[in-house]
Amino acid sequence: MVAPSPYYAASPVRRSAPGLPFGWGAVTVLLVGAALLILGILLILYGFLSFLTGTIGQATSSSFSVTAFFQSFFGAVMLFVIGGVLAGIGGWLVRLWWIFLLVGVVTGAGNVANTARGRAEQTSDVRVRCRNCGRLNPEFVQFCMACQQPV
Image 1 (cartoon, rainbow, N blue to C red):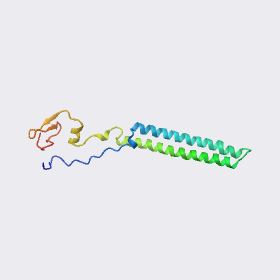
Image 2 (cartoon, rainbow, N blue to C red):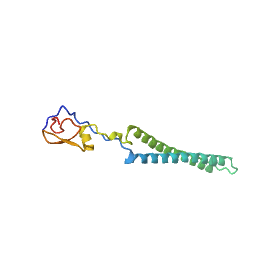
Image 3 (cartoon, rainbow, N blue to C red):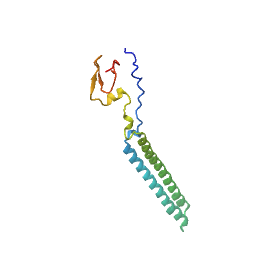
Image 4 (cartoon, rainbow, N blue to C red):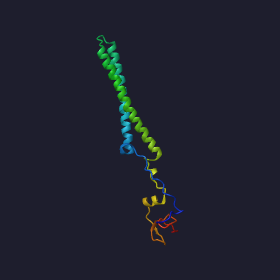
């Protein structure tokens, strides 16, 4: 077994970048969030309109009925509640997309390796053979990744 080298620190714990909900892409999250937000706002506006026409119309009509009044009133309240929930979820998804955009998940900025081994796994076309052990190392390392001797 090879003794730990003073040239290489212990490999840091690799954490995967935070993901978006349900494995969706960033554009999907933005579009679903925007659609839910718009649908929620439209339901709230329709609920307000039905409240004005239904409840106030029932209250001022000559054939006033308590059951019809409360049906239109609670129907408008239900539209408010459903619209508010949909708009809240849509707004959350749109804000979530912006948060992930700011931390670099959407742009892919968090996927850069920060160790020699990580960079070697990602890209390295040019390799240098170690004179001591014969291992092929990426050209940017100064010491062999197997025997820790100068390359």
